[in-house]
Image (cartoon, rainbow, N blue to C red; front, side, top):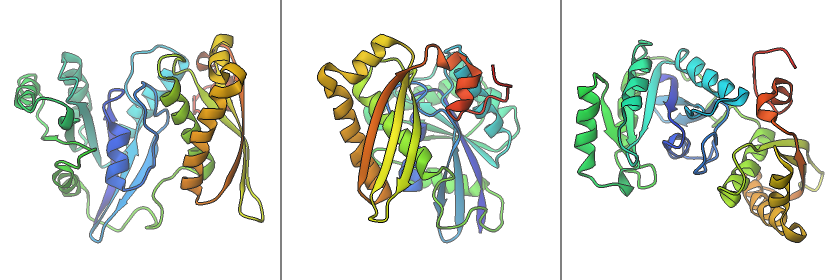
Length: 298
């Protein structure tokens, strides 16, 4: 039996969460085209007869400078130093840059066994792959590179086999019926945040938090969920609500459908939009919203 933890590291929008969801076989992390979609380390467990891979999906490495992005960077860095394997996810569609090579070499220097997943090969010219691989090796990268497509399933078996080959021998580290370390309440908030990010795209920046005020199951099996969508500016609130409340009703309807699928039960959802200016730079609010800042409240 092979079993261990794998930190999934990479730049924002490289496809980390999509890859983890496919490898685990269930949705454990939300996805959207925006940076900072994943904000906390989320664990997804892949079980097989002879191995267990515990993926730790980390926040994307992103240049934005605020207290939230600092928390996210620290989360990724900490995860990479406390695992058995690092899986660096590189966006093949975007191509290889000098900063990619530098980041990969930084994580190589930690000394943890490491692999590189070169993603999104289904939406890029195939002739770009050998050129990008050569560029990385010429820059001094020494790790094995696996071109993959999460959407098409291309080379995922080879990638999984390579990961398993680097794991230590031992018993399963997570109970077999568990697929994620996050609570249902956490996932409900993430589903809501995913739908907001997908619907509003560039209209509302990624300064959105979701706070679940009430999450309970009634005797008849229906879940009562009350939550706040927190944005940073009054004009963002107006966009989120929309004319006559149509926008918030639409996004709440999409979210409720996914919540019901996730929970396997009917959901009665109530949604409010609130403004907390510059909340991403206010450690006290970051803590209130569930982000581990490591600092005293301000």
